[in-house]
Image (tube, rainbow, N blue to C red; front, top):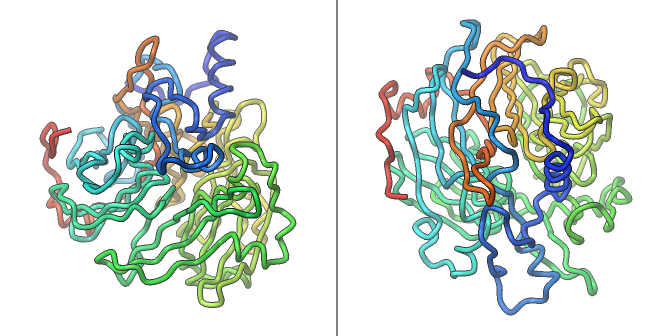
Length: 423
């Protein structure tokens, strides 16, 4: 049974050093994986510096098992289901608050992209789905980090797929169209650079538009924030890791509904992009560092998972004043032992509860406004490591209400079979 609270883990100095080294290496998939085999670059032959950027992805696991898996609930958790994906394979699950699996999507990379090269199939990101988005008809959108996006039906059959460099996030707009972050390697003089884009597709996958986020930033008042020498692989200047369509009241004049809230990890920055005008209209830095999953919640507050701003090896969740977005009005995690040097996610729930994804620990937690943990789910899956199993990283947990269109389309509840597709 999972514990509701957990302090900082008591690793020995050598193990702790190893974990921190892996964490600060970020998503450096140019190195031979400790629990995934070495793989060729996506395009061959390509210069080594280009191969390095093309190889960026997330590892499937980061930490040793704690010996604790399963679900703990206090009875105060918000009713509904949780959608999650993890690093153990290309799979997403819907689990109830008791931890029971009610539906499962799964499809190997080669089946999602049947025309892909052996090099792409050997990429670290072919092993898992970094982001998933439920479809109203019971289907799913899934992102293989830095490789592409695939649309599945309720039975995990492929509807369409594109090797477009999709990464980090994909979501469905109110009109059924699909927005995703994508990237490509472009030369800037003698230097290869990852150019982040915001890509818009129709519901059937047809390309509608592409927005160059790096170009928009370079043309903005915040262009000086770009640091080519930023930590990580040279050429990964921005590392845009979340995009959120603003819908709430415009408490701040730049936060008009329809614009996009962006998180750029390597700038420690939040930005707002106007897709109609194709320009950045607002940007801010704050007490956070190397943050993930910036979004506006139902209350209008801005939320983010602050990976490193708490210092001392701790992470925290921050809520920001929507009228003064750099002002923190709520925080949780730094004193409670929250720790995910990479990845991480947050979602504001009804009643002010917050769902937190502690990715590298393979955990989801629900926290009340007064800071009490009322539900935890510790993922049971592991990934084989060179010296034993490692906990599969949980990329994100997302709460779905019982009346969510996907839940209704799948006619849940009902226990899922062991698998819906051969793996």
